[in-house]
Each structure stands twice: as C-alpha cells, then as structure tokens.
Image (cartoon, rainbow, N blue to C red; front, side, top):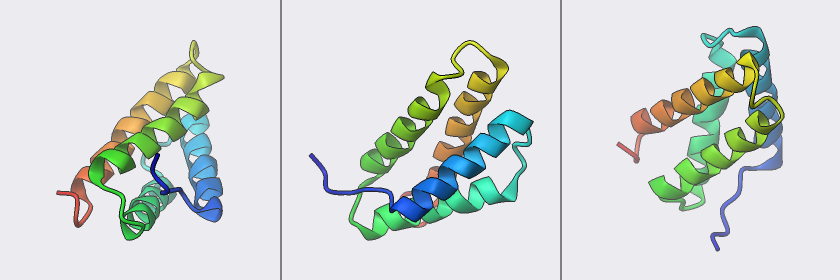
Length: 95
C-alpha cells in the first residue's frame, strides 16, 4: 500500500471546488483546475507515480459521485473526473 495521500487542506479544497462545479454545472471554474493542479503537484512531490495519482483522483471522484449516481450531478462528477485526469496528462513530470 502506498503512503501517498492528498493533504487534508487540499482535499477539502478539491471536494469543495468539485462540488461547486458539479452542482452548478460550471465546468469552466478556474478554481477546480487550480486545485487539481495543486493536488497533482503535492502527490508528485510525495513520489507518487502517474498510476498512483490517477487512482487517487479516481477514488475521490467515485466517493463524491456515489450519492448522485442517478442524477445530472453524478454525470457532472464523471465529467469532472475526466477533466482532472486531463489536467494530470498536462502536468510536468507526468507527460
């Protein structure tokens, strides 16, 4: 088991930004992308490889979407997860 983790303060920011983007439908929210970028950097700084970062992000979004599986908000969480993984694709050190 990996010792990497999303720092608690960043985790709270990620949950808040994702929830706001999912409930409002505003996927262009710069706050969401900025927080995802910070999470990716924090995990990279802990030595996480690309697969570990993907898993961490997927776990976060699976947990957030669970309560909304059969609603438009759940669909938006799926789209936000894809957007977060696209941010990872562009991140230095993971290209």
